[in-house]
Length: 240
Image (cartoon, rainbow, N blue to C red):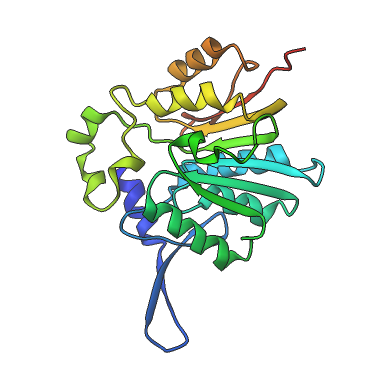
């Protein structure tokens, strides 16, 4: 993960503003440029696997596509979807002031703010009062998935320049996944899709969580270049 962080930061560049002064650091993710900041996760290359899978699910669907991007960070996944799927309407959410503010600036920068709503709150609680239940074609999420103990040990270098909230997945690295899998079902249409990233070696635990929820068809996994499963794609069952 440390090498991935270094590679991610290496792709950032400085743009000049109209006054000729040093401007904002931008990061390229799936061919869009994103503003980041010291309190916002740098999107990794492996998250593009999730982004491509999400766009593949949506391509060819009806124009009125509705998507939730949970744990949105800089807004990278939701904004990539909005940029590449013109019929998509996206609701993104994150917990902290800095991530939400950054995601909103990125939506404005990319010219998609009319189709992207960015809310603040604790997971799906961010959407309270918006009447989104049962209406989503896709919920996509890159949740924290490193255990708290590892962040105090062999992964502590991650916290040197990025926020703990972006990495800390609780005692086993799957606390947010448990809530995501449980709560996403209420927001998905029957036949809608849930797609999310997870850590190396967590695929069996993820499959067990999905099976235990009794709301989804069997999961498909997408692997990285090293043939390691990193993304789960699962369809909500039709209760009928």
